[in-house]
Length: 478
Ligand SMILES: Cc1cc2nc3c(=O)[nH]c(=O)nc-3n(C[C@H](O)[C@H](O)[C@H](O)COP(=O)(O)OP(=O)(O)OC[C@H]3O[C@@H](n4cnc5c(N)ncnc54)[C@H](O)[C@@H]3O)c2cc1C
Image 1 (cartoon, helix red, strand yellow):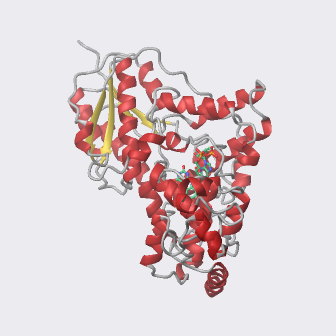
Image 2: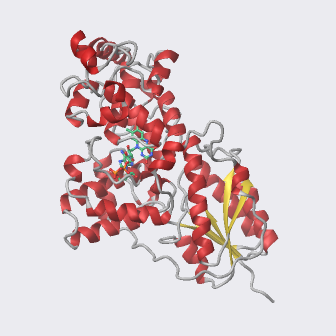
């Protein structure tokens, strides 16, 4: 009799290398059913935003092609995973199922349901690590409680010893089992009318192979990361975030490859250390979401529940469209719209502007990023928004209000970033590029700028907005 197959359920781990669940399945030496389930959103799992859906489509295509090159096949199914996976197990006669563990509470609840149902069907297997450097249950403070501050968290994580070494990609995969699959195009993950994904296609190569090339290119150029990572006018960061988001490369592979590069003298130790600690922020965000499941919707610091947010749909719209009149904020918002990604420093400045200059609830910004970022991540996005708002764990103090002019002048000193994304003011000299309203009428004419017509005047005055934010803060006595 033919051997029963084993299911490998792919999720946010769309790769073949360093995939412990795939390796566990391969150890059984049985045929494989490789499946991806598009959740129907009925179970508390947040549906992906538009840009993430676009990335997901490319990533699934890349994974399907990689599997096919190994003689395998990716089965696509839609629905509630708690029903789809057990049904697939029954249809295929599988004897086991393996998948990568997740740490968000709705995800854990679904996984537990699947495990229970598979058990009743007599299947073995279960979840494997693979998405984080360290699983959240391994880290706690001395009282056994969740840690809320990054630096001790990171120290504790490093003190656990080296993260798991990455597993190699399998050389060969057993043949597929004949199962029906839905068609990716029927899922309509990509925009059609209008096709707003042009910029995304221009900017990104998606999939595991592309992720590995990006890591390697980045490590070749990592020199200066520590000093230049805040500069949006330089390509100084890895831009690995969407690849990590969809698990096209594992954090463990990145960790060990970067460390090896440093040990081999290919990368500078200080730059590598800083880069790895940024990767640590990703783990920290997932750790926070694990322990505080409402991170995307509720203030971590409940005092902010009483914060006097303003209802300002015109301000929100100007921010979303990159028309606030503050060039670095507008550049960031347009980079986001065009490429699905924004530089970290500019994310902080743009988010701060929405929250503190406009006093618009951080949740509006979080939702916009969720829809427009290709790396939109349930943990990192909410943790970062709350960090900027001052309501989060280990958050920036609320009274630290970024001045968008000074931030622009410091981190985009020659205005190259602003000129790229806000071309209508590109003709202004460096000294005015971050504050066009300070230009004289003659300077504006010479630069071809008609303030209020070709580019907006600032929608709020910085000093007034700053004072208003501090006054609002006083009402909740943070
Ligand atoms: C308001 C706001 C929203 C954000 N939303 C997201 C999001 O949805 N998804 C996301 O991946 N990151 C988010 N970030 C964090 C950060 O901006 C991005 O991870 C980073 O810009 C990605 O670029 P990179 O890959 O070149 O980073 P690098 O500097 O090369 O860092 C390497 C990796 O470390 C991780 N990382 C770096 N910084 C952070 C951070 N502050 N928090 C968590 N992980 C980090 C990312 O996975 C990143 O790919 C947000 C930051 C802010 C301020």
